Image (cartoon, rainbow, N blue to C red; front, side, top):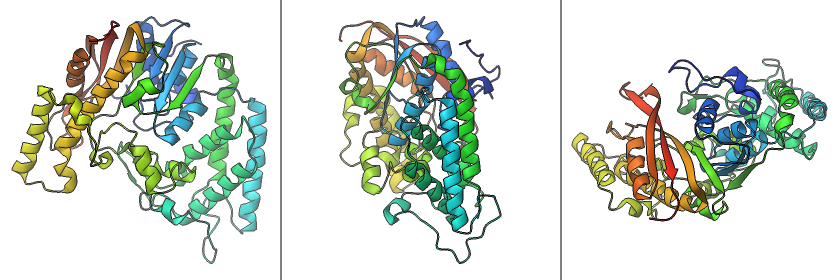
Length: 436
C-alpha cells in the first residue's frame, strides 16, 4: 500500500487526509492525532514487517490502523470501552463487503418498517412526535448524557435502529454496523458540536437516522474492498490502564511506541464519547462511569478522586513541584475559589506522576533499543500558567532511564483563553535496556 503524503501547512497538519480516510474515517475521536505522524515515525524508526508497535494510549486506534496499513504488527492499550471497541472494529478488515452491504440493507428495512408502524418516517421533517409515546433511555443512563445531547424524536429513531441491529445480529458483520451507528450519533443524529471542546450546538427536533447510518456502512464496504489485502497483519487491542502497561502487554515484546497521551488540561475525555458510550451500552450509570475513569491517566479535575496518589511518583521532581506551586499561587492571587480551581495544582502533579508510572512500567515491555514517539502539547488551561509538557516529560523520561533523542515541533495551535500560540511536539525517546 503506497504511503500517503503529509499536509503541507500548519493549519491542516492535524486533519485527516482524504487518502487516509479508509478505516481511519470509520470513527474518529475529535482529538486524534493524524495518521501521517505514524508513517513519519515508523519510517524514521526503520520499522520493518517483523517489528511490533505499541500505542499505550490507544484511543480509537490511529496508530494501529496505520501500522496495519504499513504491514507492521501492533498492540493497543485502552481503558475507555467505547474507544477500545472502535479500535477493534477499525482494525478488523475481515468482513465480506457484499455480505456487509446486504445485511445492512436488511437492518435498514427492518428499522424503517418499525418506524412506519409507529407512523414515523426516517426522512428529516416528515414526522412529528406529537401524540406519540417515544422510546427513551433508562433513567440512570440518561443522567450520564450532556443535557440536550440528543432530542426525543431522533433518540426514538436511534433506539429503533439499535433494536434492529441487535435483533439481526450477524457474527463478523454486526460490530462494523454498530460502529457506523456510533459514528452518526453525535453530530448527524444528536446535537453535539466539537471545537475541540464538546458542547451542544443547534438543537434539532428531528433528524434522519437510518439513511446516514446506511451511508456510513456503504462507505465501510468500499473501504473493505481495498483493505482486505492487509488484514493478515496483527493488531491486538487490550483493555488496560496505561500507567500499568506491563500488566497487559508481554515482557520485551515491543520495538517501538507511537502514541499521544492526554494533555494536562480541563478536557474530560469521557465526555467526548459519552453519547455513543451510553447508546451502545458501555456506560449504564454513574458507577460504571466512575469505574472507567479510575483506569485513566489523571489529566483533568473531573477525573480526580480523593485517594489518588500518583503525585507520589514526582514528589522529588523539582520542576513539577514548582509548577504546581505556581498554579496554586496564581489561584490565590486571582481569588479563584471553586472546587475545580482548587484542584488545578493537584491534578498537575497527578498527571506527571501518572506519566512517570507509565514510563517506568513501560520499560518491562520494551526490547533494548526500542524507539518511542510521544505527541504532546503545551498547555495553559490552569489559570494561564504555561505547562511545557514535552520538556517536563523529557526530564521525567531521563530519570526513568530513557535517552532523549529530541523534541520535534509538530505544529502550533492557539490557546483557548489567550490565543497565544502553543507548541504541539513529538518527544522522541530511546530505551537502551536494563534498569536504572
